[in-house]
Image: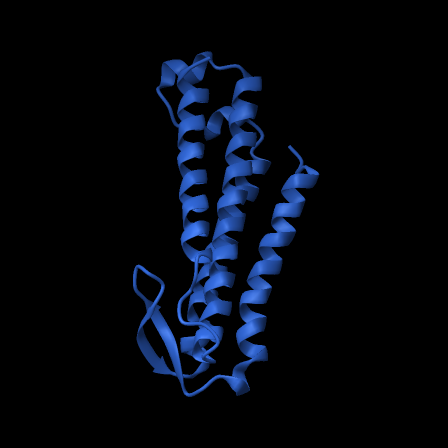
Length: 172
């Protein structure tokens, strides 16, 4: 199975967003005051501030980047598996009767939605990173609407993935 042009676009944008989540704080590092927001409440208001240093400024991006690299590894493993039936976790009777075409459709669906989850995660961390800098600089008061909107998209896609997976495995 090869990546489609949409898969490649999602992958490129994911890496672009991760890159921007590092670039923006580093490009503004000298302008950022000594106290930076490090935690936000439900409404996106900073409720914890810490001393400015690279760890406090970039730890979220570093952890997210490592997680996304592992997820890309999982996606590549799923993509490179010769027999898509081996990827399906379902009752043995159902999996044994399943056609290769259906198993391949399940694999394609899984890869697409895992790439979307990576994309939304990278978009979220970029949004939080940039808005944290803007809050530290006094240009914004809250994270704004972007974080809750992206979280809803992320959760929505995860729900769609589960729904499609159940539908494809258990129903024809």
